[in-house]
Image 1 (cartoon, rainbow over the protein chains, first blue to last red):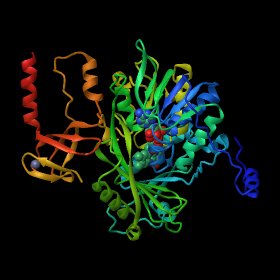
Image 2 (image 1 turned 135 degrees about the vertical axis):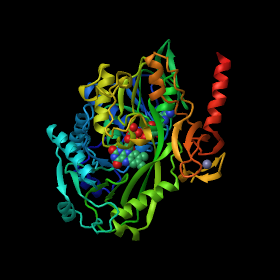
Image 3 (image 1 turned 135 degrees about the horizontal axis):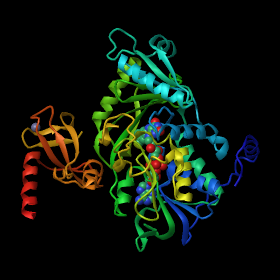
Image 4 (image 1 turned 90 degrees about the vertical axis):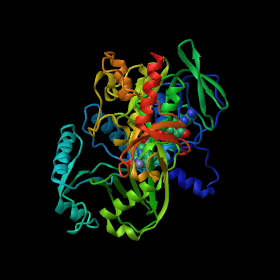
Length: 418
Length: 98
Ligand SMILES: Cc1cc2nc3c(=O)[nH]c(=O)nc-3n(C[C@H](O)[C@H](O)[C@H](O)COP(=O)(O)OP(=O)(O)OC[C@H]3O[C@@H](n4cnc5c(N)ncnc54)[C@H](O)[C@@H]3O)c2cc1C
Ligand SMILES: [Zn+2]
């Protein structure tokens, strides 16, 4: 497989671009794997990559029911940040941020990480206090954070509504300069190519439909195209976690909900950063192609439909207009939805399960894309060593019975409220 | 837009309702001292892919809680009944089981 570089682009261009080889193999499954990962999104592929790279695992496969990145990885609004404040979360997301910063070099694949900064707007003195507290916790942990007052926000983002009639006046913002966006598909493809290079088998168009058992222990999976044996089975299936856990007789503290995203027609460069509205669930950035990328709230009811309803379209667009009145002149180009694994405290799981041989990575809620590198890194560690790394030690299923929920928002066990 | 058949008001749009989650979850008896039963009740969900019994509150209508059957895969709407009728039916069956 060729190494990507400026030189290889030049060389291939001279030969009419006919010499490129495929980015990863399409192998037939072996009879038996040491680790079999279910789900070829960013998290599954990253797990496979770090298992091979960091832990020397030689016999690993990823099984995907559709195509790589066809789940939430390829549907998300690509915001990457590490502005968390709960013990258990903070350093995990900062590990991810650090991995993002070198990811393109590490994978030899341009994931187009763009640290364009992110503003969390505040619309009341109370929100300013809460933002200051969060910013201080971040700084105390060595993570960058800045507080801006209204005048500074207006200087930096002049196109927001600062008029006297603004429905939600802007008081200021908490800013993380190292936050930004990355190219979602490239993350899946980059990890797939790098994992394949380390000998990982990537098996697409195979849906896992059940498990093979050796007594009480998992011995592999049944798929739509035959059984595959494996000593360890690791789930990275996002919104389908509940379903795959149920097949192993487990109930999870997770509900599946649908989350929509929107993109407008391409427009000249307007927003060079990421802006999160503080008055309603709404955020906006601009893609490299010029489309404004908008995200909003869940549809609020359990759903596996991978499509959203119109009330959220209205809600998101009215938030957009309240924040940036000029947007009312743009047309929407597309909107779509993904199925979210909303956990009871809004935080994820990277853990062994009560079923021998079964490992779980899930419960990512709204924000698992930013977690992709650290999620794969920590899950690989957990699978290889059969024990968590300190950065994911709190992401266990038993945190609910121990009374150690990681509830960033403090809203209690209501999955759709996180 | 989901249209829900409220037993009191008839067919109304989802925007008049608030979602209340899984309606198959049952609170343990107050005398139950087994923590596992309470953990199940507060945190664990079946999260089915298909038909789901769930609470909706008709906040901007008759303000009754209803139990609705809805398919989480297709968004198809099934039966709806008042939550208090569902609760009565449930306590009758659990008494019969005792
Ligand atoms: C609209 C939207 C916006 C979002 N915005 C952001 C954001 O701005 N920032 C952020 O950090 N996060 C965001 N997220 C969340 C983020 O996308 C996810 O948390 C993350 O991508 C999950 O990655 P994953 O690899 O776990 O899941 P996925 O990419 O969904 O991968 C899971 C894979 O498992 C496969 N699978 C499922 N069942 C089976 C089976 N039975 N057999 C085989 N394979 C199976 C699926 O086909 C899928 O490819 C957003 C999500 C959505 C939907
Ligand atoms: Zn009613």
